[in-house]
Structures are given as C-alpha cells and as structure tokens.
Length: 292
Ligand code: KIV
Image 1 (tube, protein in one colour):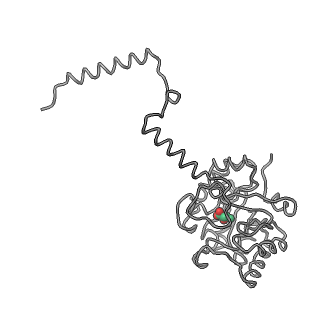
Image 2 (cartoon, helix red, strand yellow):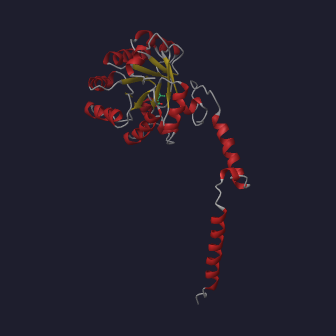
C-alpha cells in the first residue's frame, strides 16, 4: 500500500472518517500501522507521557526529532506528522521554516503540526510555500498552558467560539491540510467542521469532526497521571503490564525463570575441559603463598 500523504488526508473530508493516533516510538508505530491508523502524530505530549514532565513546554527539537525518526521507521503507510515543540516556530518565520524542514529532512516526517490560530498564519504560509504540509491545532493548545491557566475546555462562550471559528478559517485559507480541534464543546466542533474546507480532527471536540485523535497510552490504558473526560480507554494494558511484571519479579526471585528452554547448552566435551581448567586454576590459587 502506498504511504498516505497530506493531500490524501485533505481529500478524505466528507468521504470517510480519519483515524489518527499520537505515538512516540518504533514499536508503537508498528502496532498502530497493523491496526490501520491513517495518521501517526509524534505529539509533543511525549514530554508528559514518555518523559514524565508536567506539561509539554520543555521538550526540545532534538528530543522530538529522536522520536520522529523512530516512528517514521515503524510506519510504512501512515502519514507521520511531527509536532513542533514550544518556541520552535513562534519566534520568527525563518526559524519556523528551518525547524519544520528538519522534521521532513532528518526525521522523515510527512508533515508538521503547529498550535495557534491567526497569530501563526505567516509561519503556515511560509512552510506551505517551502513544500512542508502543515496540520493546524486550535482550541486547547497545551503550549499556552501558562496563559490559559491550565488544561481547560475552550470556546465555551459565543464570542470565544466565533474567535475559534475565525482562527480555523484563517488556517485553512493559509494552506493547512487539516486542523486539530482540542477540548471544545461538541456544537463548536460541529460548526467549525461544517465551515472549514479541510478536515477537522477532534480530541474532545465531539462526534461531528472529520476524524479523531487520541494518545497511544490513553487508548491502551497505560497512562494514569491525567485522565481527561474525552479519553476512552479501549484496553487496560497498564494493569496487565503490572501483573506481567509482578510475575517476572516472582519468577526471578523463586528461580523459576529462566528455565532450561531459556538457557543455552554446551558441548559435553567442552564442558568437561572447562571444568578441568577451573579445577587447575583453583589448585594453582590454593598453592599460591598468602601475602604477609
Ligand atoms: O501532542 C499531542 O499529542 C497532541 C494531540 C493530542 C493532538 O497535540
């Protein structure tokens, strides 16, 4: 199957729902690939889920690139989108294009994602002009956690919802191939989806978006530090993992592991010679006079 491209995702609007997942390494990318995901986002949420930070602000370009490369290796057909970390695109348009380009050139991603509305339209235009597909992201934008005052539902008033709609329209007009809508009331998600020409990918934005995105660890029940209302766990692998690891610890302590099936045998002659060699070495050591 050929690799999904940003234009393929743009063309899916109104035809089929888009399934996207935030995944951070080679193994999870391969699992997602086997499950048929359309888009794998190497989200800056890896700062929290993989690196254990309290928010997404401190993850660096180099850390993101490290994970993007791994996901790109594991994904054969899904579109890989690299999330641009905090301050890698806000400071200047030139730096934004250079950093975005690194994700395609060095990371082998097929697109990048930026958080923000009209304020980042110059960056979006410059990236698209340079040949870099851009996924927009409005609503709850975690890189603004300090100004938003926490991870909260956005666009709850008519005015805030209208501002969000204008931001989404501006991003689509600037060339974004799709837009993530995070943590907004479902009617706002539906209205934005109707109004913009490109697909919307919702996370806590209701059922009417053109696609949905969740985090790998949330879908599988592996991350328990934060459990927003919009998360649906499709498995409880965290509990299964603890139970499996407990079994391993017990087996090591009771010497049940490793068994003969996990061990390597030795040619009997080589084993006998080895034993004789050890005996001679022991004898030689015994014969050595003790130091005063
Ligand atoms: O970083 C991330 O994982 C994201 C998605 C939740 C949209 O931005």
